[in-house]
Amino acid sequence: MSTATHDALARQWEMLRMIRPAPWKITVRELRERLAVEGFTTTNRTIERDLKELSERFPLASDESSRPYGWSWARDANFAFGARLTNSQAVTLLSARMHLRNLLPRLAMADLWPLFDMAERALASSGWHDWHRRTAIMPSGMPLIAPLVQPAVLEAVHSALGLGRCLEGAYQSRAAGEAKRMKIHPLGLVMRGAAQYLICTLRDYGDIRKLALHRLSDLSVTAENCQRPEGFNLQDYVAHEGPKYRPAGPLKLKARFAAEAAAHLRDTPLSADQQITGDEGGADVELTATVEDDQTLRWWLLGFGSRVEVLEPAALRAEIAGQLNAAAHRYS
Image (cartoon, rainbow, N blue to C red; front, side):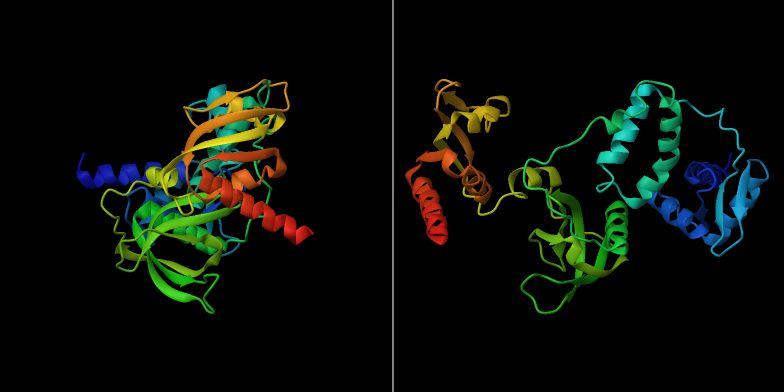
Protein backbone atom coordinates (compact mmCIF):
# COMPACT_ATOMS: atom_id res chain seq x y z
CA MET A 1 0.00 0.00 0.00
CA SER A 2 1.44 3.38 -1.02
CA THR A 3 1.84 6.22 1.48
CA ALA A 4 -0.79 8.28 -0.34
CA THR A 5 -3.30 5.42 -0.20
CA HIS A 6 -2.57 4.82 3.50
CA ASP A 7 -3.05 8.53 4.27
CA ALA A 8 -6.33 8.62 2.35
CA LEU A 9 -7.68 5.59 4.23
CA ALA A 10 -6.64 7.04 7.58
CA ARG A 11 -8.28 10.37 6.70
CA GLN A 12 -11.51 8.71 5.57
CA TRP A 13 -11.65 6.55 8.69
CA GLU A 14 -11.35 9.71 10.82
CA MET A 15 -14.14 11.30 8.80
CA LEU A 16 -16.44 8.35 9.46
CA ARG A 17 -15.76 8.72 13.19
CA MET A 18 -16.59 12.44 13.05
CA ILE A 19 -19.92 12.08 11.28
CA ARG A 20 -22.90 11.71 13.63
CA PRO A 21 -26.26 10.01 13.17
CA ALA A 22 -29.14 12.11 11.79
CA PRO A 23 -30.59 14.58 12.64
CA TRP A 24 -27.13 15.84 13.62
CA LYS A 25 -25.03 16.93 10.68
CA ILE A 26 -21.53 18.19 9.94
CA THR A 27 -20.35 20.46 7.14
CA VAL A 28 -17.29 20.12 4.92
CA ARG A 29 -15.69 23.13 6.64
CA GLU A 30 -16.20 21.59 10.08
CA LEU A 31 -14.73 18.31 8.88
CA ARG A 32 -11.66 20.14 7.54
CA GLU A 33 -11.17 21.94 10.87
CA ARG A 34 -11.43 18.73 12.90
CA LEU A 35 -9.17 16.83 10.52
CA ALA A 36 -6.56 19.58 10.96
CA VAL A 37 -6.67 19.04 14.72
CA GLU A 38 -6.03 15.32 14.12
CA GLY A 39 -3.04 16.12 11.88
CA PHE A 40 -4.71 15.79 8.45
CA THR A 41 -4.17 18.83 6.23
CA THR A 42 -6.51 18.72 3.26
CA THR A 43 -8.90 20.77 1.10
CA ASN A 44 -12.65 21.13 0.85
CA ARG A 45 -12.56 19.54 -2.59
CA THR A 46 -10.74 16.45 -1.31
CA ILE A 47 -13.23 16.08 1.56
CA GLU A 48 -16.16 16.40 -0.85
CA ARG A 49 -14.65 13.66 -3.02
CA ASP A 50 -14.06 11.46 0.04
CA LEU A 51 -17.66 11.91 1.17
CA LYS A 52 -18.97 10.93 -2.25
CA GLU A 53 -16.85 7.76 -2.24
CA LEU A 54 -17.76 6.88 1.35
CA SER A 55 -21.48 7.41 0.73
CA GLU A 56 -21.31 4.72 -1.96
CA ARG A 57 -20.14 2.17 0.65
CA PHE A 58 -21.70 3.42 3.90
CA PRO A 59 -25.22 4.70 4.73
CA LEU A 60 -24.25 8.38 4.73
CA ALA A 61 -26.78 11.08 3.85
CA SER A 62 -26.30 14.65 2.65
CA ASP A 63 -28.82 17.31 3.71
CA GLU A 64 -28.97 19.71 0.77
CA SER A 65 -32.02 21.62 2.00
CA SER A 66 -29.85 24.59 3.04
CA ARG A 67 -26.29 25.78 2.70
CA PRO A 68 -23.78 24.82 3.86
CA TYR A 69 -24.75 21.21 3.17
CA GLY A 70 -24.45 18.83 6.12
CA TRP A 71 -23.56 15.16 6.25
CA SER A 72 -24.76 12.52 8.72
CA TRP A 73 -25.28 8.80 9.10
CA ALA A 74 -28.69 7.84 7.78
CA ARG A 75 -31.43 7.44 10.39
CA ASP A 76 -31.70 3.71 9.68
CA ALA A 77 -27.92 3.09 9.70
CA ASN A 78 -26.95 -0.12 11.47
CA PHE A 79 -24.11 0.34 13.97
CA ALA A 80 -24.13 -3.23 15.23
CA PHE A 81 -20.64 -3.75 13.80
CA GLY A 82 -19.22 -1.15 16.21
CA ALA A 83 -17.63 -1.86 19.57
CA ARG A 84 -19.91 -1.77 22.61
CA LEU A 85 -19.24 0.33 25.68
CA THR A 86 -18.98 -1.25 29.10
CA ASN A 87 -21.10 0.19 31.91
CA SER A 88 -18.02 1.79 33.45
CA GLN A 89 -17.07 3.46 30.17
CA ALA A 90 -20.62 4.70 29.60
CA VAL A 91 -20.96 6.12 33.13
CA THR A 92 -17.62 7.91 32.78
CA LEU A 93 -18.61 9.46 29.45
CA LEU A 94 -21.96 10.77 30.69
CA SER A 95 -20.37 12.14 33.87
CA ALA A 96 -17.73 13.92 31.77
CA ARG A 97 -20.46 15.44 29.59
CA MET A 98 -22.16 16.91 32.66
CA HIS A 99 -19.16 18.08 34.69
CA LEU A 100 -16.47 18.90 32.09
CA ARG A 101 -18.45 20.61 29.35
CA ASN A 102 -16.90 24.02 30.17
CA LEU A 103 -13.34 22.70 29.91
CA LEU A 104 -13.57 20.44 26.88
CA PRO A 105 -13.02 22.10 23.47
CA ARG A 106 -16.09 22.52 21.27
CA LEU A 107 -14.55 20.24 18.65
CA ALA A 108 -13.88 17.58 21.26
CA MET A 109 -17.45 17.80 22.56
CA ALA A 110 -18.81 17.52 19.02
CA ASP A 111 -16.65 14.46 18.35
CA LEU A 112 -17.82 12.86 21.60
CA TRP A 113 -21.56 13.21 20.91
CA PRO A 114 -21.78 9.87 19.08
CA LEU A 115 -20.13 8.25 22.10
CA PHE A 116 -22.53 10.04 24.44
CA ASP A 117 -25.40 8.59 22.40
CA MET A 118 -23.81 5.14 22.60
CA ALA A 119 -23.37 5.55 26.36
CA GLU A 120 -27.04 6.42 26.86
CA ARG A 121 -28.09 3.39 24.82
CA ALA A 122 -25.67 1.12 26.71
CA LEU A 123 -27.10 2.16 30.08
CA ALA A 124 -30.75 2.50 29.07
CA SER A 125 -31.86 -0.74 30.72
CA SER A 126 -29.40 -0.77 33.62
CA GLY A 127 -29.44 0.75 37.07
CA TRP A 128 -26.62 3.09 36.03
CA HIS A 129 -28.60 4.99 33.39
CA ASP A 130 -28.98 8.13 35.52
CA TRP A 131 -25.77 7.94 37.53
CA HIS A 132 -24.58 11.28 36.09
CA ARG A 133 -27.76 12.87 37.48
CA ARG A 134 -27.29 11.27 40.90
CA THR A 135 -23.85 12.83 41.42
CA ALA A 136 -23.07 16.52 41.80
CA ILE A 137 -20.23 18.87 42.68
CA MET A 138 -21.07 21.40 45.38
CA PRO A 139 -19.15 24.70 45.32
CA SER A 140 -17.13 25.32 48.47
CA GLY A 141 -17.59 29.08 48.22
CA MET A 142 -20.30 31.53 47.24
CA PRO A 143 -21.73 30.42 43.86
CA LEU A 144 -21.30 33.16 41.25
CA ILE A 145 -22.90 33.63 37.85
CA ALA A 146 -20.32 32.81 35.17
CA PRO A 147 -19.37 35.77 32.95
CA LEU A 148 -20.48 35.52 29.33
CA VAL A 149 -17.74 34.31 26.98
CA GLN A 150 -18.28 34.85 23.26
CA PRO A 151 -18.61 31.42 21.57
CA ALA A 152 -16.19 32.53 18.82
CA VAL A 153 -13.60 33.45 21.47
CA LEU A 154 -13.89 30.08 23.20
CA GLU A 155 -13.62 28.24 19.89
CA ALA A 156 -10.53 30.25 18.87
CA VAL A 157 -8.83 29.60 22.22
CA HIS A 158 -9.53 25.86 22.04
CA SER A 159 -8.30 25.68 18.44
CA ALA A 160 -5.10 27.63 19.16
CA LEU A 161 -4.29 25.43 22.16
CA GLY A 162 -4.96 22.28 20.17
CA LEU A 163 -2.91 23.38 17.15
CA GLY A 164 -0.13 25.13 19.10
CA ARG A 165 -0.77 28.42 17.27
CA CYS A 166 -0.79 32.09 18.29
CA LEU A 167 -3.89 34.23 18.71
CA GLU A 168 -4.54 37.82 17.71
CA GLY A 169 -7.32 39.85 19.24
CA ALA A 170 -8.45 42.58 21.60
CA TYR A 171 -8.38 42.54 25.40
CA GLN A 172 -10.34 44.88 27.64
CA SER A 173 -8.69 45.04 31.06
CA ARG A 174 -10.48 46.45 34.08
CA ALA A 175 -8.20 49.48 34.20
CA ALA A 176 -7.87 50.33 30.51
CA GLY A 177 -10.40 52.64 28.92
CA GLU A 178 -10.45 50.76 25.63
CA ALA A 179 -9.52 47.32 24.38
CA LYS A 180 -5.95 46.79 23.20
CA ARG A 181 -4.90 44.64 20.25
CA MET A 182 -2.25 42.05 21.05
CA LYS A 183 -0.56 38.87 19.91
CA ILE A 184 -1.09 36.02 22.38
CA HIS A 185 0.93 32.84 22.90
CA PRO A 186 -1.61 30.51 24.61
CA LEU A 187 -0.18 28.09 27.18
CA GLY A 188 -3.23 26.69 28.94
CA LEU A 189 -6.78 27.19 30.12
CA VAL A 190 -7.82 27.26 33.78
CA MET A 191 -11.04 27.84 35.70
CA ARG A 192 -11.12 29.88 38.88
CA GLY A 193 -14.57 29.83 40.39
CA ALA A 194 -17.05 30.77 37.68
CA ALA A 195 -14.52 32.41 35.34
CA GLN A 196 -12.16 30.95 32.76
CA TYR A 197 -8.66 32.30 32.21
CA LEU A 198 -6.14 31.89 29.40
CA ILE A 199 -2.60 31.41 30.69
CA CYS A 200 -0.28 32.92 28.11
CA THR A 201 2.58 35.21 27.16
CA LEU A 202 2.06 38.40 25.16
CA ARG A 203 3.88 39.57 22.05
CA ASP A 204 7.57 38.70 22.47
CA TYR A 205 7.72 38.94 26.26
CA GLY A 206 8.45 35.93 28.45
CA ASP A 207 6.44 36.75 31.60
CA ILE A 208 3.38 34.59 32.22
CA ARG A 209 0.04 36.42 32.05
CA LYS A 210 -3.54 35.47 32.86
CA LEU A 211 -6.33 36.83 30.62
CA ALA A 212 -10.01 36.51 31.50
CA LEU A 213 -11.78 34.92 28.54
CA HIS A 214 -14.85 37.14 28.92
CA ARG A 215 -12.63 40.20 28.32
CA LEU A 216 -11.32 38.92 24.98
CA SER A 217 -12.94 39.81 21.65
CA ASP A 218 -12.32 39.73 17.89
CA LEU A 219 -10.03 36.74 18.39
CA SER A 220 -8.51 34.76 15.53
CA VAL A 221 -6.02 31.91 15.21
CA THR A 222 -2.88 32.78 13.25
CA ALA A 223 -0.48 30.58 11.28
CA GLU A 224 2.37 31.45 13.68
CA ASN A 225 3.46 28.72 16.08
CA CYS A 226 3.08 29.44 19.78
CA GLN A 227 6.34 29.96 21.69
CA ARG A 228 6.33 28.26 25.10
CA PRO A 229 8.73 29.53 27.80
CA GLU A 230 11.41 26.96 28.50
CA GLY A 231 10.45 24.67 31.36
CA PHE A 232 6.87 25.96 31.63
CA ASN A 233 4.41 23.42 33.03
CA LEU A 234 0.77 24.39 33.46
CA GLN A 235 0.17 21.99 36.36
CA ASP A 236 3.12 23.43 38.28
CA TYR A 237 1.88 26.94 37.54
CA VAL A 238 -1.60 26.17 38.85
CA ALA A 239 -0.26 24.41 41.94
CA HIS A 240 2.30 27.00 42.97
CA GLU A 241 1.50 30.33 41.33
CA GLY A 242 -1.80 30.36 39.46
CA PRO A 243 -4.23 30.66 42.37
CA LYS A 244 -1.89 32.72 44.58
CA TYR A 245 -1.91 36.42 45.22
CA ARG A 246 1.21 37.99 46.72
CA PRO A 247 2.89 34.63 47.46
CA ALA A 248 5.61 35.00 50.10
CA GLY A 249 6.54 31.39 50.79
CA PRO A 250 5.34 28.96 53.47
CA LEU A 251 4.46 29.96 57.03
CA LYS A 252 3.54 28.04 60.16
CA LEU A 253 -0.06 28.91 60.98
CA LYS A 254 -1.34 28.56 64.51
CA ALA A 255 -4.99 29.40 65.08
CA ARG A 256 -7.82 28.81 67.55
CA PHE A 257 -11.04 27.68 65.84
CA ALA A 258 -14.55 27.15 67.08
CA ALA A 259 -14.76 23.36 67.14
CA GLU A 260 -17.60 23.12 64.63
CA ALA A 261 -15.82 25.49 62.22
CA ALA A 262 -12.73 23.26 62.13
CA ALA A 263 -14.58 19.92 61.95
CA HIS A 264 -14.18 19.60 58.18
CA LEU A 265 -10.41 20.13 58.48
CA ARG A 266 -10.08 16.76 60.21
CA ASP A 267 -11.26 15.13 56.94
CA THR A 268 -9.67 17.59 54.51
CA PRO A 269 -6.50 18.92 56.19
CA LEU A 270 -4.67 22.08 55.18
CA SER A 271 -1.31 20.32 54.96
CA ALA A 272 0.44 17.03 55.60
CA ASP A 273 1.78 18.30 58.95
CA GLN A 274 -1.55 19.68 60.20
CA GLN A 275 -2.33 19.01 63.86
CA ILE A 276 -5.57 19.72 65.72
CA THR A 277 -5.54 19.62 69.52
CA GLY A 278 -8.50 19.92 71.81
CA ASP A 279 -11.71 18.00 72.37
CA GLU A 280 -13.87 17.84 69.25
CA GLY A 281 -16.92 18.17 71.48
CA GLY A 282 -15.55 21.25 73.26
CA ALA A 283 -15.92 24.91 72.41
CA ASP A 284 -12.55 25.51 70.72
CA VAL A 285 -9.70 23.59 69.14
CA GLU A 286 -6.18 24.69 68.23
CA LEU A 287 -4.77 24.09 64.78
CA THR A 288 -1.21 24.22 63.45
CA ALA A 289 -0.26 23.71 59.79
CA THR A 290 2.34 24.83 57.27
CA VAL A 291 0.52 26.83 54.57
CA GLU A 292 1.36 29.21 51.75
CA ASP A 293 1.58 32.86 52.82
CA ASP A 294 -0.66 34.44 50.21
CA GLN A 295 -3.89 36.36 49.74
CA THR A 296 -5.92 33.17 49.43
CA LEU A 297 -5.02 32.30 53.03
CA ARG A 298 -6.21 35.70 54.21
CA TRP A 299 -9.54 35.41 52.36
CA TRP A 300 -10.02 31.94 53.84
CA LEU A 301 -9.33 33.08 57.42
CA LEU A 302 -11.53 36.17 57.12
CA GLY A 303 -14.36 33.97 55.86
CA PHE A 304 -14.61 32.36 59.31
CA GLY A 305 -15.35 35.72 60.96
CA SER A 306 -15.50 35.42 64.73
CA ARG A 307 -15.05 31.63 64.65
CA VAL A 308 -11.26 31.82 64.25
CA GLU A 309 -8.45 33.65 66.04
CA VAL A 310 -4.99 33.70 64.46
CA LEU A 311 -2.38 33.14 67.16
CA GLU A 312 0.82 32.97 65.10
CA PRO A 313 2.67 34.38 63.29
CA ALA A 314 2.32 37.76 65.00
CA ALA A 315 2.38 39.75 61.74
CA LEU A 316 -0.50 37.75 60.28
CA ARG A 317 -2.44 38.04 63.55
CA ALA A 318 -2.05 41.84 63.48
CA GLU A 319 -3.07 42.00 59.80
CA ILE A 320 -6.25 39.91 60.29
CA ALA A 321 -7.12 41.88 63.45
CA GLY A 322 -6.76 45.12 61.49
CA GLN A 323 -9.07 43.84 58.77
CA LEU A 324 -11.71 42.77 61.29
CA ASN A 325 -11.47 46.05 63.21
CA ALA A 326 -11.96 47.95 59.96
CA ALA A 327 -15.00 45.78 59.17
CA ALA A 328 -16.44 46.40 62.65
CA HIS A 329 -15.91 50.13 62.17
CA ARG A 330 -17.82 50.02 58.88
CA TYR A 331 -20.80 48.45 60.67
CA SER A 332 -20.70 50.76 63.70
